[in-house]
Every structure is written in structure tokens, then in C-alpha cells.
Length: 383
Image 1 (cartoon, rainbow, N blue to C red):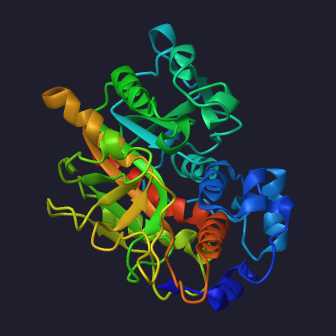
Image 2: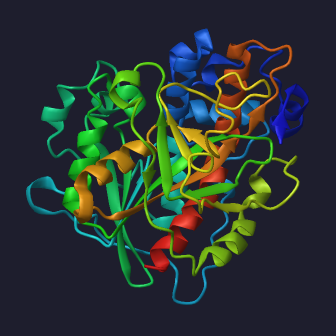
């Protein structure tokens, strides 16, 4: 799939390269003024389809909100059992669990909680997590999401097939926190709290290559940094990180369950979403962590082609932290959905292309996240 202006009109009802998108549809004011990639990066993190700006966006476009979400027809005995309380450990720690699931943006949180913690929403219901907030806040730049929220994240508990899980929506972001990268410490801390057997980092990302469509899920035990800007000196020379293969028992079931809500994905999708399992231990098939809002373009502007299957902005931190832990580290996997496919660059400025990628996320990121959340369900159920 390669996205152009005609695709935008057919699937979202407007062409952001031909008109100014109303400011009222933006969660991050600077992005509405500049369309600069770094501001659109923050727009993706902050955008909330359930908030006033999100409602304005849904009114302006043909995109649909999670009010259209259809309950998942879970196999007998495998439905998530949402805990009645969030629970907590000593000294404000997260509770212990078999699995730790971490997601990142506001809309990823909404969709992930719909699937994994039915009845509890990540924004309105999850419990705040503030352990060592004051300490980590000293290393964060002014205006970053965690400082604005006054917490490191929020969480709730669930159980799937007898396996306990903590679902954590992070407010800390490698790309947003500042040059000291306190997100590394957050990862260390929440893994120490939960003591999980398995850690899943999950959410949206940009598909690399025209073979991907919105909603495809990349399931990868391989992550690596492609930091060429603000974190070049800190992470630029790190090798790829590897974990073990996933337990695949319920992955085919998860793919079948995609059908319940996949009609909310783009009309131009030519097939059902796929689960792409990264199997080989090499960089060309992996999840790529950049230190800039990069996305695949037909002219390969960001030089992502050949580096992996999907680009995002944080998963390699988990690989790094687990590598530093050595033999005591839990298994981990990156579970990323394609929220924006390759952009056709011909005749468009980089800001126009970035705005297209951001608007596609705003239109379909929550629905593509339903797919990756279902893969997380399958992995938890198989533990």
C-alpha cells in the first residue's frame, strides 16, 4: 500500500495536502500551526479521539471513533478478566504479574484497554503510577507529557487464561523526555516492580515497504536503534537486541478475532490484517527505533528501507535494558501495528507528507491498535 492524496480522500474524506486541517482537530496546538514533523510527533502522542479535539476530527473526517467498537467474541475460557482494583506493591510499586504490557499514546491506551481490560479505560479509570516521579522529573525537559500529566504512567490488572498481567500506559517517551533519556530508568523500574516472565511493548508505527497495510501487526523479538540525531551519541552504536520467539498457540485465533472490528480500517485495504512474525536474527527484519518522526516514503527519504519492517520511537530501549540485566532479564517482544503505510512523496513537501502520516494515525491508529492488542492477548494466553 502506498498512500497519496486520492487515498486520503477515499479513506478519510479529505486531502490534507490541499487544505488546512481545522485547528480544532489538533490536540497539540503547535502542530496545527507548523505541520513540522517534530510537532506532529507530539500530536500523535497526545491525540485523543475521545476528547473535544478528537470529536472535532471525527466530525471533519469520515473516520470512526471507538463508540463503534464491537465486543470481541472470545473463545470459551479465554476472555480477559479485568481486576476489580488496580492493585499495588510496596512503596508505590506496580503489582507483581506474569506479564507486563506497555503502550504509549493516548489512543493506543484507549484501544488496548478496550481489549485487555474490558470495562476499564486507560485514561479515565487506570491508577496513576508515580514511584520516583520527583527524581525522574529532574531529568525531563519542560513541557514533556510526563511532566504535564504529573505521573510516569497509569495501569490496571487483568488475567487471561490464568496468567496475570499489568497493562501500563506510559507518559514517559524516549522522544519527548529530553537528552538524559529517563525512559531507560522507567523501564528498569517497572520491570523491577512487576518481575514479569514476559514484557510486551506495543502500539502503532510506520510500515516500511509498500507490502504493509494499516492494521498489519509486526511481532518481533528483534529491535534496534537507528538514532542519527539527538540520541546519536547515546544509542547510535548499539547493536541489535534479540529475545526468544513468541509462544504462538493462539496467534491464529487472534487473527480470526481481527475480523470483529477490521471493517473500521481503511476501505482501500485489499486483505485482512496480517501478523508478521520476525523469525531470523538479523536487522533487515525487525522493529526500528528512531530518534525522529520518521516514516517510509516512496523516495526513501529517511533511509528506513532495508532496516526493518516498522519504525517507531522507543522499543529498542526495552531491548537495551534487558540486555543490561543479563540472565535475570525477562523475555520480551515488540508487538507493533502499522498505523500508517508508505507515503507517496512525488510532488509533496516533507511537511505535507508528515501531516498525511499523522492524519492517517488520527483516523485509524486506534483501530489498528485493536489488532496489536489482540496479539498481546494471544501472547498472554499462551504463557
